[in-house]
Length: 547
Image (tube, rainbow, N blue to C red; front, side, top):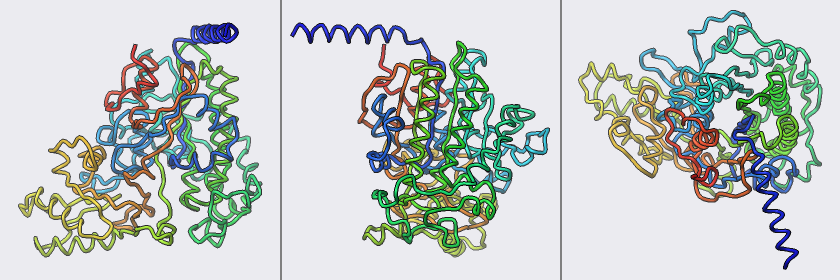
């Protein structure tokens, strides 16, 4: 007993000494977002992960097992905005990647900023800024707290992922130029690319990656967590190119170098550039806390081509686990574990192929927006006369022609309600809500609360639609984008990993529900700075206990 008592006291004293050696604040915060990583994928691939990637930060940190998005349209751009602002689209204003603007009578992309005056031709196609993002982010508040002494840099293959993550005061945001596949930025951040960025681009890492063949990391028969490689639910790269191996050299000649995004080397390319940014910008090397946001977009691209249960997606995650392990090793050497705070989550989850679910016997289907809006138009014409009552339709939102409604002296609340009630009759529609109701009522829970959390008056439609679980949307009404990124409030879209690791983070699991809007608030509290201006999330008490 004496031996165990002495050992216990020794361990206790060692813990106290280590805790006393921790700095007041971390030198570097690393905010990692893995796109479309629904929570269940961690369990699915767990036994194949190594010990230095996902497993290391989960076992050595705080793992929130029930972290969810608490709004209706769980999409990528709103997800990135929610992570850093600590609130929902109803406050930060990023309701989707694209929305319809009534005053301009056209669609807007969530980061387009045509007011930018670019000084270099290379930036002409990259007029992007966070000016549509309402309120501050946690890194904005960090920079405000120390008069912009902290550095904030964002890196992601997607432009909006980098721009929204960085907030308004980021020193730089970098993304992949769609034409050259080089890392680029915009005049919002700089007049020209820094020398180290040009040097990185000139090293031709892309040519090295694209000279390879994408084969499975392990023998393909070991990919037992996935469907067969030649299953019928994949579109792949087209032209029957949906089975291993993939000749990346041939694919790049056919589609261009941006094909890197659809391969595991998209993650590696992102990781390598993030490391170059940390080294060259000397992040975490002075007395002020710095922040780097890293978005791994490749899992989303691969899921869209091959599906949630493909061998390709499994291989992406097994290789991402190794990239993550390399990144963590570098970070712990560069700034030290006690000076490092890592947060890893996802912008959203992802749905399975409805054809796969249908063959299993699950109740699924497709909602055709073209046909539905056409029938809605006929219905409104029969009631009110004339036509063109629907101005636009985007992402399960109906924008009515309010000018025509005003001229016709029709009550807006009335036509919104008739539209919502009519759409409820379509197969696959679970709920609808009108803008009038969402602006005047105050829902505290349930699906209508999620409607309200997704609704931003200046950008949302007159009627919002929620489909039944398992249903997806098809159609391309009124020159909408050529793709419809599926989104829903259901668990497969809303439930994502949330992992904290490093500085002052204890080893524990949190099983109660937390929201992704709690992330920025918890970070602000950990760093001792003001909460983001529009924050509605709360600090995770188990992570940041009350003093």
